[in-house]
Length: 518
Image (cartoon, rainbow, N blue to C red; front, top):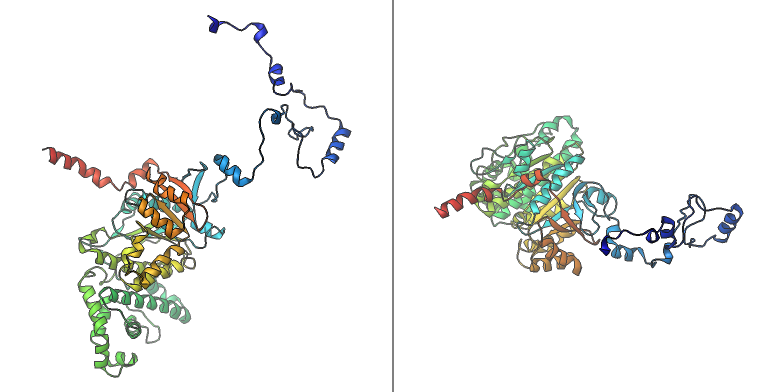
C-alpha cells in the first residue's frame, strides 16, 4: 500500500538540505572571520542596539546558522506586556525565603512567605497578618502549615487561645502537650502571673526593676479595667488609678523594690472591698467611706467575674510551666465552650494580656508568631478590649512578633460594637495594621465586603469569590497595595493527616450510619 512504501533515495534529504530550507546550510567549522572586517563592523555598530540577524560574526559571540527573523515574526513590547503574554516566564514578585506555602498559579513558581523579610525588604510596613475564609476552605491548615514551616527558620509560635482545639494535633505530633483550660482540666492560669519577672527581679538594677514593673503594672491595670467592662461597668480614670495603687501594694514594691509577691484577681477584689487607711489615703480619698462608695461598682464587677465566667480558671496561682524553648505552645480553650461565648471572650482577653507580658520579658531575642484565633470574640467585650488588640498590632515590630489574626469575614469586625461606635471604627482600622492579607474562598456577598474594605480590583475580587472557591487551600495573597497573588497551598501527606479538621466527623460517620440503618 502507498502508506507502507519506503521512500526512495530521491525522496531523502540530507541534514544540509533541510537546514538550507531554513536559511542556508551552516559552516560547521564556524564562520570565517576577517579580523580587519570584524573590527570595522564593531566600529560601525557603536551605540547601535541592533545585531546582525544571525548574531555577531565572531567566535563565542552567539553566532547562529539560521536566520530566525526571516522565518517567524518578531515583536517588540514592554516588560509589563510580555509578562501578560507569557506569564510562565514572569518572575515571582516575592523573595524565595521563608515558609514555602505552595505555588503561584500565574507564574507556576513556588510561593514563599516570610513577613519579617518582606518588612526588611520594603514590601510591607509591618509583619502582621490577617486571614479570612469560610469554614472548610483551608483556613486552619494554611495557618498551621505556615507556623510549622517557619520553625525551620527558628521562629517559634504561641497559639494565644485555641478556641476549637484545631492546633492540638500539631503539638502532639511534635511531642508537645498543649495547656488545656476548662471543664475537667486541672490547669490554672493566673492572669496576673509574674512569669519571668519574679525569677529575674533580683538580677536587675533598680532602674531596670522600675522600668519593667511599670510596664507590667500598666498592662495589669488595663486588663482589670477591660474585665470590669465585660460586666457592664466602664471604669473611670480614678478607677484605674485605684487599681494601679492596689496592684503596687499587693506586689510588694512600695517598700523599696526588695521583693515581689504573687497577685491574683481575687486578691485585688478583696483589698478593694476592705481597704486599710493607708490605701484610701494614698489614693487621695477623703475617707474610707468615700473610697468604698466610689469603687463599689468596679469591686462588684471583679467579684462577679471571678465567681462567674472566670471561676476556677484565671483566679488561682498558675500551676504549670511553659517550655519556652519548644517550637510551639498552645492554650486549648475548646473545653470552655460549654460556659458560653462570654467565658471564651474573657479567656482570650486574659490570655492575650498574659502572653504579651510573658513574651515581652523574654530576653532570647527570638521572633515569635502569635496566633489570635477568632479575635473578634475578644473585641466584643468593649472598647478597652479593642484597644488591647490595636496596641499589640502597633507594637509588633518593636516586640519582634508576627501577629496573625484569624477571622471568617470582614463583618466580624463590625460586630464588636454598635454601628458608628468607636469600637467599630478602631476595629476596621486593624486591617491597615496587617500588611499581609490572605483571602481564602468566600461567597459573593463576603467577597464584595472584602473588595470594599481592602480596595481589591475586579480581578482580585473574582479570585476570592471564584477561583479560590473551587479547591481547598486556594487564596488571594495581598501584600500591602501590591497586586495579589493566586496561591495554592500544598500540603504533604503527613500534614494532611495532622491538619485534618474533619477527622472527628469521619470517625463519627460510620457510627451514625450504623445507627440509622439499624
